[in-house]
Length: 518
Image (cartoon, rainbow, N blue to C red; front, side, top):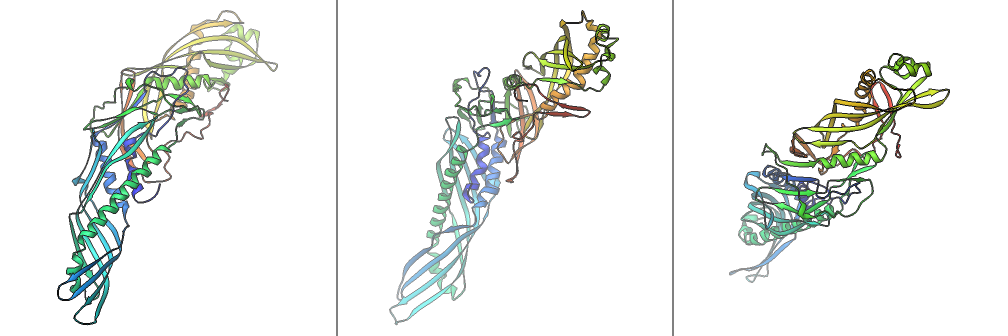
């Protein structure tokens, strides 16, 4: 983005707290937006403070056009006064005398009581009829401007899934200008130069207003060019297409977002109806700047996509109790296995039979259905000998990790039944402790390694969540947070683009998915 005024409006990206995105490729398309964002009064004040302290200051140095005027002086003749190299070099602004006000007419941002310093060169030429004499002089001048007020009204509209920013109104008013000349016989010309105060003020108002207009145009162009997806691993992406028009009240601005999970690169235009807007997030702590709601369907659609991609099947050949990977270790658990295959190696193949399903109420519950197949490695041949069906019930927790919503699962209970066996009947109650250990030492660490990466939340690059809290309600997780801004080009809001799908757990070799993307 270009310097000066464009930098002003980059900070207004917080008003469009999500990058624009496109439609998903879901196993089942959502009927309503799955995410929403609400910027509170506190958050809008944060935007205002950023705008004032960083954006307006970034205008400097601002060069104004040259000014000249011919003045008739009674009894002497006429004077030619010219001002050049007029430069605003400093703005002094106060956040306490400024405000941001959303409403039906748009988002109004006003800062008043601004003072600024201006420097310029002056030139004076006097031609008199008394004698054929011409008086020439020049020097340097400093100008102090007080009571400058700058205001603009921005419009936010949904334009085919992206947020369009438009300048509805802008103003710049200069109340008081003091000019001090230096150099030459400056005291003789002070009164003549003072008549140019109005022209200096008009030039300032015109130049600043022009910069405001250019800044909005550049920012709108930047918004339109933002990427269309947030990568999740390397096979999926989070769709954050805006749905419907922003909800603008006197106290907040809300956005509805598609929020579904798609295969990476499968983009289109969201067809969600604006009549199905979700309830905007409500935070118990109303002082929080930002609220982001995430429907449980986001997690379940991600689960379904990764299930279809084969990321939920893996072969286990190493666990802390290595004796279980030889039939000798099972001689007291499944005697017939040891009898039929004495001293043969074993591997276990874990395959989920359905995508894990997650439910959110006052907490998080998840159900996982899986098959555990026991394979015997006999003379180089892999011989499946038994398959056990598992229904695993787990409870979940979430936390904020950077700008991601991360989670973890804890085993609550499971049931198991024999699906088939080539070695006769198995006693499930004897095998159960072994399976419990397998789930806790291998299965859950593998799952939690993925969950710890988290789901990327729709936060613009450069902004970071701070002091975030999570609240559960019916089918929704709400993230309530303050926001900080980091002015760094190297900041990366998402770290999903180059991740490998292979997970390393301390003490356990790489678990490699057996699906199509392995």
